Amino acid sequence: MGLQTFLGPILSGTQKNNNPVVATSATPSATFLQPGTGGSYRNTGAGDALQFISIPASVLTAIPAASFPYTFIPTYSASGVNYPIVLPAGAYIDNIDLNIYTALSFSGSPTGFQIAVNLIGAPGSTYASAQNIANIGSSANTTVLPTAGNYALGSTTTAIASTNPIVASSNVSAITNTGPTDTLLQLVFTFTGGTTPAISGGSIGFMVSYAVRNPDGSWYPQTPTSPIANPPVATY
Image (cartoon, rainbow, N blue to C red; front, side, top):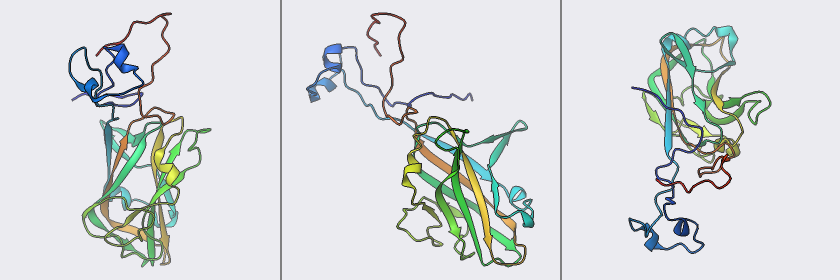
């Protein structure tokens, strides 16, 4: 199977312009949905994309106890190369799923454990400094991280609990990621209390769902500058 990359919205169907009069009409009509030369409108919604990443126990338990809070960019390996989750510029994140494959366990008797989910971008970009978009678990409690299961992103008004361990941060503007560059998913693991606590077992993963938009945050296709003075009308 091959992979494709996109530099703009993945559209489920652009507005057809085989009939320029209809496509540029200031008075939309349902009659423009009819097939053939009499119609031009089609679905213009931007398509969703998904990215997945798993963090096995071997990675979590290898983090030295003395290194917390621990900041890292999770990756998956393919043919000996490590790949992070890279979200395209302008992407609109509509959900982050937390997959707990095996419940986390800890050594050192910590009183709290939290995972901060951040986005970080290139130097000089909107996300040059990591921005927090969600938090998992509680710095005041180690029991809110539940057993194996899939948990969707909750709202900022929802308290972190075992039934809802991942909650969006108050920085809602970060979710829309309208910065000019791509961003990476970054995690920060933090313990509270205990005696040199560490992660002794467990495995987790993430699924990030987002709509691919233009880097400026617009939802629709942008027409590139044409070298032709009077370019022909494109048809689909």
